Amino acid sequence: MTAMGQRMFVAIKPSEEAVADLAAFLEPRSQHPWIDPRQWHLTLAFLPSVPEHREEELAEALAERLLRLAPLRLRLAGAGAFPDPFHAAVLWMDVRGDLDGLAATAQAVRRTSNHVGATPDGQAFRPHLTVSRLRRPQQETRWVEVLQTYAGPEWVADEVELIASHLQPGGRGRPRHETVSVAELADREDTDGSTW
Figure 1 (cartoon, rainbow, N blue to C red):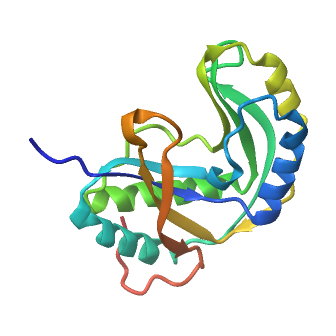
Figure 2: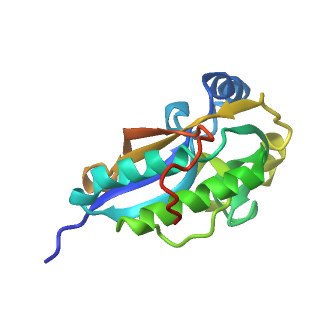
């Protein structure tokens, strides 16, 4: 039986100011099961099974590739639900700002990950920040309407994190997240001419 690799994802974390602002908006509404703000992130790629011997190579490849991309101006504003507000399993905040740059960054992350053998899950990239996961699908139209009134501060995203997701024993509780490496978005010249 082949051993499973490490669950990982590549993400952008909002600035401390952006996190504090959204947390302050949600705090008076604590009757809802919000995700811990320390786990908030914008997923660029989910990597369900990264072989252990590929982790270091992946971190190095991401660092090299992302140096060529520019930092992004982003903000959280508006909201929605997956799959929809009438059968919601997830509530999320929308992302505004440099969406073309964000999509290009996600594409670069996915291609780089695939190139080193850390295959992404194949889901289409849809920028969002998950703020609530519900135990069972339910109507959440009122909460979506509340969240849609939110508009947070802009921040400059200049780092991308490679994060290991450790499942809790028995599958209970939220996974524990561990940042493995950080890659800069620095808009530097490509020095070796390689493209993925």
